[in-house]
Length: 512
Image (cartoon, rainbow, N blue to C red; front, side, top):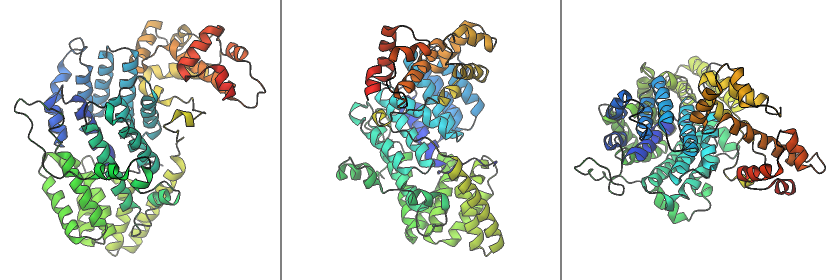
């Protein structure tokens, strides 16, 4: 199967990535944030491109500048340059191991999401969410990332659960714009799912499988812990143009709503009404897309056209469907992902049917359904709960860590995992295995993961001890004997490090 199993709307990812990057950088890089808030990603890149020429020493106290540059490079699809800038930002981060860990997970999570590596992306965002060192802003961004991953896998309930957790950070967030983004994403997912799960598009098998399996539920049912008026208030579209930014070029939260947000929420309103058969809304939707062609937001256009294509198919507007399909089909630059996208493949078959090309439509739909079913079978994630108390058997598969390491050092991680049960495993042995010095191994691990190789070994050993203590096949596991098998011989050190890592003692694990 050569096709990537990208099941969600492409818009769901890039526009929110741009918004969270802008919020995080708007006090430090106002011109960059303004461009992102206008939806003009090329202009945003231009605002930070010169940072690439600064040396690392000059940027040591401002790793956020390098992170903004990397985000901008990713948005304009300069992915290799983005990866290099992310690595520089982690080298420049002088905030201690905890922040290095947050930065590493955050960068790897968004990169993985863009590449459709959903398991890696989810593990990275989940690691941030569960980390007590995460700030409210970092945890909120991680919840947004989790919601995007889960939506694109067809798990709308899990996506909404993540967003409900994000809204819970509201009182602790310095910038209320974070909650505006969360509210828009709630509306976005609800609209996108309502279109894809409509009766008219009942043969869109991937999305209807989500509805049949219980993955799709209306927003108010999903956000069960919120007051109905609170949800309604969050979902009110703010269609008025935002206030002009201050003349000094700075952005102060509370007086500026990013232009792209009311514009995009207006688009969502047209989209939903079009799918319901509202001819006025359909005309408005097409006009809005036409107006965007010459604007700074033109980079958002292909993804918006794809959702519009599904909406007009659901609404029964054949001529509009053919027009949008033709616009997408003739795009060659940057459209390879669109052409391998399940939504586009499905729409391709529907438009062929509208044009009376029955045999072509059947062949296209057969290809689409084959790929959709393959994705449904193969893209099965372990859906750990956001509440660790409900997830007693957390997987020790740490593929997010290997994804955060440079390629040269990934065999070292694999070696540690493969040999973790050996009580004599040490950093020197690992360094020798990949033919680097111990110091080089330590530097790269600390910079990439926020912990040293020896700390990783201790962490994995404790996880192994915990698994054995939770094994119900053992009558009464001995804590000290179990620890000794994993190379941990000091009882006091075991209890101290065990409680720090799992927030409970070994005996509590056994009795739990």
